[in-house]
Image (spheres, rainbow, N blue to C red):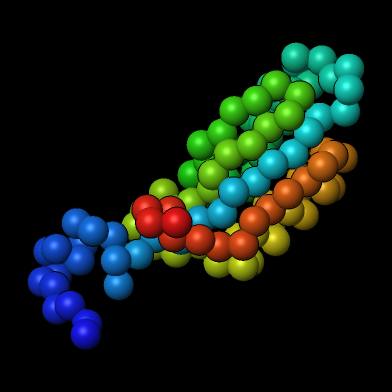
Length: 108
């Protein structure tokens, strides 16, 4: 039996029309990469891919990075977003690139 919830409660619970989807990424820099190279590459990722596409990135690492990508506003990432990120990581010679399927960032 389906539960009927008010719009306010659906928004608060991030479900139905307020569901937010995102995806996880992982990548590695080649061994011996300098700190400057790592910083400039991550800055470029944010400037060239994340910000222009209205995405947000929460991640960390040094030579091995992992993180979550979702939209800056309430909404759903698309497979197109995943491919844009995957292509950029690949084009910039990063290694061990992993881009997960889309998932609910609040409930999965």
